[in-house]
Image 1 (cartoon, rainbow, N blue to C red):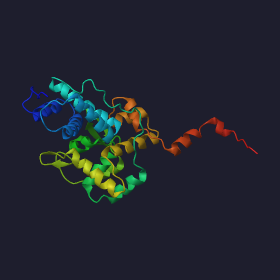
Image 2: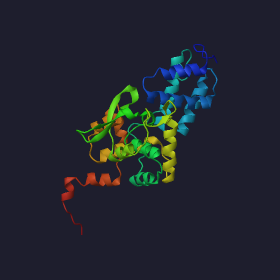
Image 3: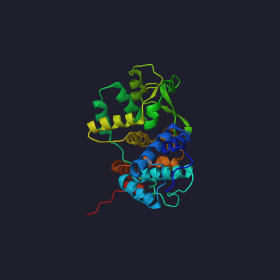
Length: 281
């Protein structure tokens, strides 16, 4: 097929496409998605066929959860729309994301065991920030100047620039505040690497390492699930949970609301019919 004639190279097209996004989180996601595509297709500056686009959809549907597969597919489709010319993905339906599916939430015992096993301040702080609702890209890029002690609230407040370049303020948990005070250094970023911050992959590696030590293999996003579910089970208003997570709509927040059997039993016990004691002989 034709090459990407509007750009000098495939890498220049990718750089322009990713650089056109407003937020760090979106740029990280787009790089990840395009890598999945080009690792599968090959790193050649050519336009794939429609048949190859269909095969790729089948591949990601088998390999990834539906929501992730849909995001990867839509990123690739948007990329070829961006570079112009023939877009083999244009008329192919993306994998249908499951709305309000129940996410996997680590149990409290796994979280406690993992934190008890961590043997260094850096990894412990990373994990606690994830358990404080931060995305992996937000953990990687958090600056020391983004954290302020507000005496009127008696809390450390973390300023986050998340998806869509939107700012939100997240109160630190007591464990996170303690870890911040015990974490040495005076660099610009909490997790410095040369002149900049660490990569998202480092955050993923820390999550994988310590969750495996606790008997699981969990991605950073699972700790965000745990944070949201803790708040919901503590009866925090869903609107406030949505703001803490940086969601654009309440419908997105709903996927973090996970009920186990004890929650269902407690809810059912509120039924006034339970006040009637009927004995069957």
